Amino acid sequence: MRPVPLLSALLGPLALCALLLPARGHLANTDAALLLVVVVVAVSTLGRRWAGALAAVSAALWFDFFFTRPYQTFAITKSADLVTAGLLLAVGLAVSQLAARARRYRLTAVTGTDHLARVRDTAVLARSANSALTVVDHVRAQLIELLQLDECRFEYGALLGHPPRLAPDGSVTVDGVPWDADRLGLPPGPVELRLFGTGRYLGRFLVTGTPGTVPTRQARLVAATLADQAGAALDALQRPVRAA
Image 1 (cartoon, rainbow, N blue to C red):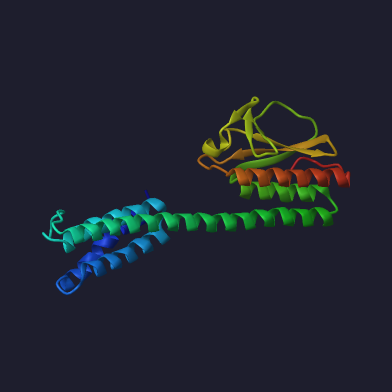
Image 2: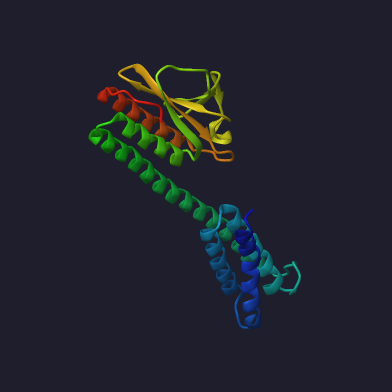
């Protein structure tokens, strides 16, 4: 767990309770609970799902400790306070889930826009470039960013060896056996991404993943699309190409 979201989740509700404590005799418990929900919302918006859930639990506990009788204990004697504490916990957990889902949708939208831009820019370059090598170099740079690669090189011509393969559907195989790239990332060592034009093999990118990174399936699908564009450029321009 990262320290800043963890500290915010644990100490944010406690800090608010300390600020509200002098007004405890004049502040309704429901009002205190609503203010604690605001803290949970803030933590959920800025942190991850676990941070929001932890803030919800922290808020419910400190509400119980400071604002329900007997004070400075985790016991609750009044049924109304018990309901308020339970609602505070339930609302806080719900907010943390909704905030996490909103972040995921936002990330998906931003990522999808970025992927479309990569495919569009490559298509524009392929139409205007007078050298297939220009397109290949462009795609090579795109693959490094897209898949967070440690290394990427292009080989033109005959196949050598049998490295793991990244298929057009985004799946990865090692010696013909499926590799769980969604969980493990790319296999160690070079992984080939083949280029074809009018049904014939033209060359391949050999990509080496950075340890600890896990490119998404969507990113791998975009990588295969970019490779198809490079293959089409090689096939259409009919120019000799040296290895990048």
